Length: 361
Ligand code: MRU
Image (cartoon, rainbow, N blue to C red; front, side, top):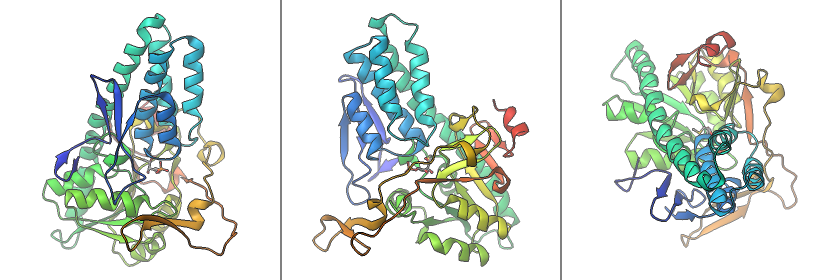
């Protein structure tokens, strides 16, 4: 997508130097800061402190991380050490394991001296596929958008789409998952408006989705997360679309904390609740998402403090609670399949149940 009118991806390969460059998302939306990743440790740190975040981009970054490790030492032991280090960065997004398994599967049978090149090519392949996959997801979802628009009492009125967290191009390599159809709808001249939920505590909606949509010129309105139920109740939302970090074989969906509440409210008011995801986000090894999906516990400081720009335009973090307040910070929640209207993948639209998903496997 574009930054200040110039096409970019969230992670870009520098072929001559064989390094990767990322948009450091901890500086957004106030500054576009590019950062070079040159070592496995750089990649692991970027995932852990969320310079890169979003399931597909976490996977792509980890793939480059394995390349860096194999460039420096390509023995089985070195590969296993790098795999474990990268895999331990964050627990919920399954794309991390998917990408690490994919690169390891390719390089393990190879002679040690061939492994780094193969890992580099696999990381590039994961990036290229991500772009194609997300564009395809957008195309399938766009048909659903158009069908809902056509059924509106006034089809010329804006199609009001609600989203949660950031599942845009900055969470992937390009296009995004849940945001891809919004770009395609806007570019196709559909009158689309987005309710952007701020997504406490880290504000992925307020700082990243609002930034992306502004850069692309898509009409949007920021809301606090707690405003969502009220808008759904008042008929001001035509559909909800979110991304996913892990989807089980029966269609249970893990996504950013707060997604489950939106699914409950959407169901209560009969508003379609869609989940957009690449097939790489399906964990075929588990069925019961509420029981088996690991939920990341992040620092309570993310809840008790808020970052932003102060009056001098400098980044600052402020305490918003009484000092010493105890806080809990679950990073994700699980929406049971029964609350999901449909799963939108690169291969089309599927019901969120085991029988439908089995066709995808
Ligand atoms: O903690 P984050 O910012 O990595 O959480 C991201 C999300 O929950 C996204 O919705 C999900 O990863 C899909 S990104 C296409």
